[in-house]
Length: 307
View: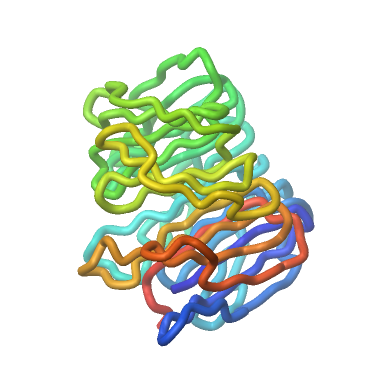
């Protein structure tokens, strides 16, 4: 299991999560990979990517703990997401990048070749999520709109004005629902028709969300706490109060065993530079911790073992 974090100081941080007898974060690499702030990171299996204000995507091989290349764009990179069908265990098929000019760039991930760029929003893309089928992606932007991109045809197929700016959008593991975060609220929608089923109200602004199994979605934000919401009833399942001393900028849900979806591990990163790992069955105190001593901006991870 691997974790990758980006920072305001342009450093990239890589860790291996060791889970033999007890959980431990083992450093893989740390270096200034970008010329300016890293805005977003993505991980799938042994591949990782980071995007920043320097209009560049950096690609990493986690199996060798090295940077293997760069992709150059014409605008800052604001969101990244890998996609791969279930038949490919540790190798992604595509990489999608949301950009500050409102476009969505699509790459073949083997090798990393640009396929197409689709103009999606009038302003910056805030967040993107690829449906598990790989046929479509949803985006939200600074223009207060929600958009759907047909990835088979490579074009925008739906566009709707929300009336408020959503900062985060994420499909659940099944693809049957998606979540949108607007300030301190998370709305739960049916994927088929975008019907609103629940609105979850956090105590303060939400900065990150991470879906888990059994209808649970984790949220972290301004108050430094982690809240687990049960989306089947719209109520709090449990919470980790004061999980961090500062705002939480990233949450990742990792599965200890593929055949046991309830056996999950939660990783969280804070703007104070601390990454903490929580056992989903015992969340009173962190099971592992690392202090990067930098202002972290994002976190991503993968449960797939490094080869």
